[in-house]
Length: 506
Image 1 (cartoon, one colour):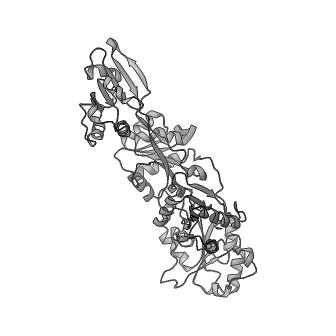
Image 2: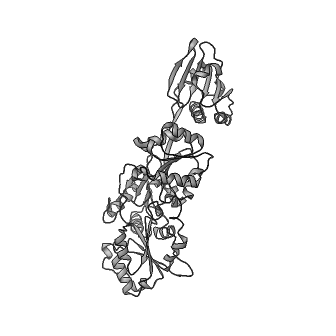
């Protein structure tokens, strides 16, 4: 039997960029991914084509799959020779049941690996400006669960020992906070000890509530502060006032959906700028679809091949490459609209005969190209395909060599029902795909456009709320003023397939 393996991967606390490199590599190799509710859905974008994605829920007091069935699922898939990733929120060893799941693998002779993750108990406090240790305040910290499973329901924690700790980090404790407060006070913890609750740490929805141990349960009830949240008890909570870096960023709380092509390498300057300003970036996967269907044997019938922009040049040369067409066989003359289209050819070792001004009228081509009787032009652009017959049998055939489209099959935001506040792009060619992604209300969706060409194209398409940054950089003052205006508009929510409510239960 060709036995596979199971890899337990810590997904981190919520921000998908806090996944480890080893975790990302495991997701890319996986044949099967079994994932929890608290694992960011954006991590599923690393899955290879054809990988089976199985949601196992794990909400408080309700599991889509009972733990026993999860165990059997891991074993069954691995015994088929599959590479199975068990994707668990936070770190799999911090109240994440990795021990018992790994034991099941061992009992069935299934090879396994455990990839640590950044636990929410460390990340959420830091994102709230609360370091868990500081030499002026403490030399010890304890991590404890505030929720006991049925098997240990009668086994009380050592409250005397916990009350003596300088800093406590409590997982899954919101529901039992009155009991936790009462026990700590009963065993000598000062009622004035600072307490913080950090809800949905490291993501846009992060909220922080600060109080004192003696009254924290009432403050939580009054604020309707619900799970999932991490509780921090100790003097280090006071550091938040000066170290609150994440929630004080100018774009904190904004989720921006940014165009992302499969051909892109790394993060664009736009993504980096938005993240540094505090926005949560939601990559919108786009694919380049080549639609060049003109038989290459017919290219010789055209006196000129004219290309509207560098994007269409790229699609055309890709079509030549896919069909192994030697460019030396081209007998037509080449013209491009604009310097960037010329450079797109130039970097491929092809030098067009003529550079035309951008946005030239097609009706001007006969004179610009010195067309003679019955000569034809193939115009490769983003206009509506058509055939234009002019005087003396001259013909301009308009086609599209390719399009940029929203990759609907790509998992992520759509699967999780994530909302977004704006769209953003620095590439005019992605605008139709972003409109497709935004749906029927696309023209009313606020969009940040970097580059004059992109902003002009957005307005020409019909976008009503455009933040224009003409010199390829984000200008914070302009963006803030625009943001305040856009906040009065509509926030879009993608169709949802699951809930985002619950606790840190794993």
